[in-house]
Length: 535
Image (cartoon, rainbow, N blue to C red; front, top):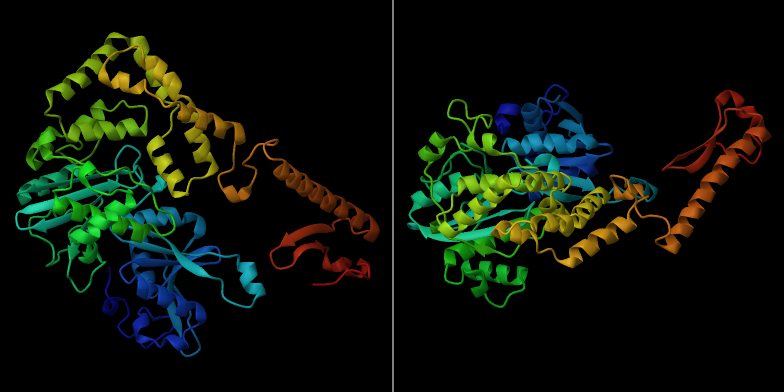
């Protein structure tokens, strides 16, 4: 991020040629109410890029505007900040394009705080006050959940590490799928190899640094990072408090409603507990109103799979080629013929952590053998899998309350097909095919229930309405009928008023300020009846 001195050498000049870029040099009381609120929010999230909803745009001001204009190659402009202040640097993007621009910023290693309007602007205007805004989402590289920001066939891991001497604890989770793992080991070289295997999008580091809660982008150095850690990742410096053993253990017990950690397998792994608890605290802090549910924490050991060092992984070209580091031409590229995003992610994990257990290896081989020897079964399963959506990520959005109607329908359509998948799998007897045969009946009932209640083509946004089928709820049907009657009444009103006034292009319109109104050309104003009130 560009420093203040580079972007605006004279902070006391707020002209159109040199707008203010640092709010710290300004008196808050002299700023307009909106800028005062922006500054208040910014001070709560000093290490993020703050995007602030203003009408149909998300705007950035001061230094954040300079940074975003440089990183995204957007036009840097300015806006009046107050009578005694002058102009303030500003950059904005349309609200409907926020996801795309946010993704670009996060890919560059920035954290983005989204301050959105949380009430109807017309209601605030009617009461003569500024519309209420709050931080609704905090985007960091490891906490992305929207499909548009994620790679379908690759996990987006958030990791946390706690190091004590040569011993270390590691926890990692994919918020979008709910996976949550932890481990404890010794030798920092093994930690390095594990991080390179996982390729986490963001790594949490507990520290006593004065500037905690800051995000270090790949390649940025810090005296608070261990020299052994790879510098190719984003690191978030966090307070030590959530990573203390008591705090972390309490967080895990409360989150998963447990009395003991013994069943999780990490009861005697204090560093693993500290890493997992600190990671949970960070997720709660960043997800705000929408908490994505995680699966029950699973403890694993590195002895369960073959550890591949960086050079071996590179030479084998498992996920990228040696020549130019591209996916095209790698081993995964050659093998991946999966039909679902879930299968693509699973295949990637399998290649990066080869099994050492003979029983597990044989189970996979037997499954592949049976599918090769029965091509019709293989083709039938593949055909069915093509119609099954990403259950892991859709379930995560449903659990967090961020799913839309189309997500619900995709989930339901996938659930009702699990029974058919189980019937196909019953033709085989390998462990993996047997596992597919066990489908809880409640899942099929849930899927059919949702399908029976939703329309065939629901709208993208719930606020658009028209999601529930007719005949499901009598009260809803009655309200819809009244709404249709109102529409018909308005249509008839337009016709009758045209006839009464003789103005053929008279129209019934609507806006948030006046509500419904009648409009006619200014040239026909003398034809308006006496009971019309001009606005």
